[in-house]
Length: 314
Image (cartoon, rainbow, N blue to C red):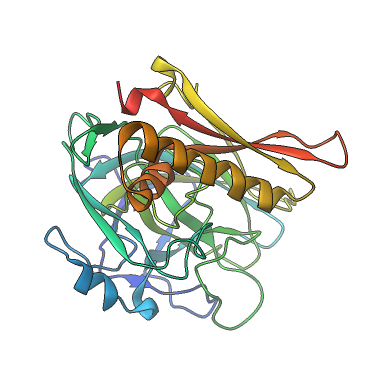
């Protein structure tokens, strides 16, 4: 629990999808803080003893639950909701999966795979993977957003102009997120908490981990914002930079094809050098490797790079 927070929203107050008609569970004044209990992205369908059978039985109607919504008193369309991410309370476990039909290389990885993670929720020491890799942790909320103006139920899976499933790993403690308000009260919800993720979340899952989140709110009146923006409190890759990187590239006229080529090359490199299976390498890339657009001006070909931190193996 958060002793300094003004409100607590329990995990039972969760919903699936964005809908401006979902009744709010609390009203929060600007300047107040809220402690949210968040489920993992499976909605509790997977646990510390989950197996491939549990993964196969996963109901996609119950994935990516978000806790809320809460009304921000005085928020109106055309305002900006300022969200300060104060702290995370991690659970100490998580999961990463290759889910058939999902991920950047879904056509190459058709079989399910699952890794259950254990980590120290207090020290947040790097988590052991396949007995040979240590993945640095950086808790953050994968999904955080407000209700869209369009009526009806909208899937929580794609990100939106009002936030949602952004999966930006730098939405970590200390970051300030700015969201455009489209409905009265904003109706903010949060969930999909992760213990670690690479930029791109390439296999479709990170270290999916239930944890609690403390957020503080404020309003910026009458300042239209087209898309979310955020400010970080300091360096964003220090936890990965210590040993340098192995980098592969994809070069060509299509950024998506370049991203796939760069990732495929990294999977091949990991499998050959560190003897992980291709699907194990794929999931490792998803939790700690970064896709970057290195060059997008020298037409007709662009360069996408995939960065794997050597710290995970050293």
